[in-house]
View 1 (tube, rainbow, N blue to C red):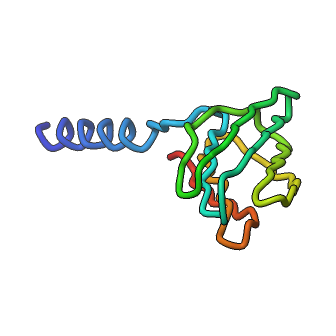
View 2 (cartoon, rainbow, N blue to C red; view 1 turned 30 degrees about the horizontal axis):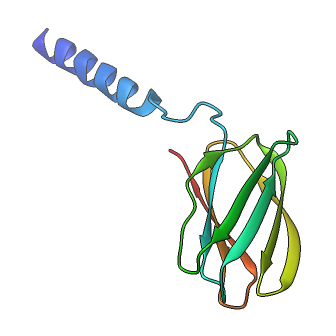
Amino acid sequence: MRTTILLFALSLVTLLATSCKTCNNDDPTARIINNGTGSADVQIKGADGDIVQISDLAKGSISSTKKYVPGTTTVRFKIGGEEKTESISLTSCTNYDITINSDNKLIVFSQEID
């Protein structure tokens, strides 16, 4: 009888531990990291048409993290007299670091939320 109760309790704990998921189709988040050659002006247009403007993001700086709607997001940035535009796809339950690298190119790093 004790064994049955113990097995039932362990099964219940295991079920609860494996069924807990922290992300339920949460909107993706993104931030801009400027490792480019100078200060950057960045415009992010989300899939829903909302626009986030980040002016004068200093070299070596990181913007605040913001939530976006999943889908195709357009990032336009101007740095050192160059203007570039790239589209990226943001998916639910993912955090993104959109990095301007030392060659003034966009590199996207992502991490899924467990």
